Image 1: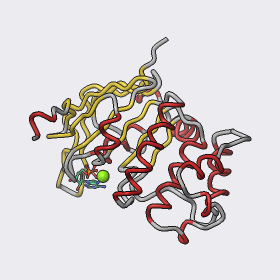
Image 2 (image 1 turned 135 degrees about the horizontal axis):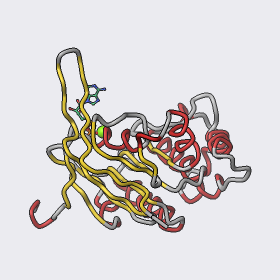
Image 3 (image 1 turned 180 degrees about the vertical axis):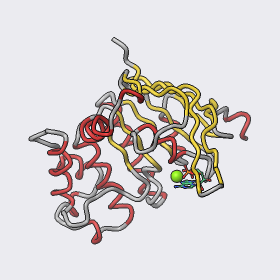
Image 4 (image 1 turned 90 degrees about the horizontal axis):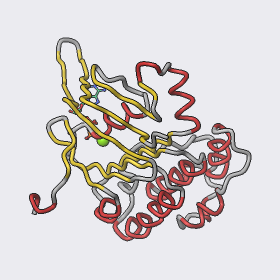
Length: 228
Ligand SMILES: Nc1ncnc2c1ncn2[C@@H]1O[C@H](COP(=O)(O)OP(=O)(O)O)[C@@H](O)[C@H]1O
Ligand SMILES: [Mg+2]
């Protein structure tokens, strides 16, 4: 069995604004296997969010080879991608992804239901993330950090195989981030998920199997010795 969740080779991706073209990814390659967690770091504007959106099918590469779960992107239709996002790939966007008209609990039930699951471990997840008391609140009644943790609970409730996270602890204050980072990581390890985590949080990055830096449109193994 091929246990590669993501295989990307020589990906190019540019945004076009009229005549202007912004080349963001320029020959990016990446492999992520089942049970492996990889941190992606890189300065603002280097293309980290763009990369995540290519990997969940919200953007298409201009050229290069991308396979997810062993399937080539050129063979995946929009509805195939939608199905993957519903059932196998959880994306944690930077600005959270809760439905504003549902309470936190109902968001979790809804998310699990979309993935075809009848049971979910929402209450346990919320308790572990330290936000059991907000289960019956609506997203706009939460602080930024509570909203981010509720979005984490929703992502795990769908029991994904691959998690793509864009700064999952970015809105947390330092103390809460220190507490949530290991919980987030334990949940990934317990479930043997593949995870690609864009983060500047050293607690999270150091727990990953590899740290890659996105620089000049491609990923490079990060060498802390070079950066200090
Ligand atoms: N929809 C878009 N249209 C045009 N340019 C964009 C768009 N989204 C992002 N960009 C540009 O692409 C580059 C990479 O953006 P992004 O992937 O969001 O970087 P990061 O997440 O690393 O901060 C930036 O220069 C940004 O301004
Ligand atoms: Mg970003």
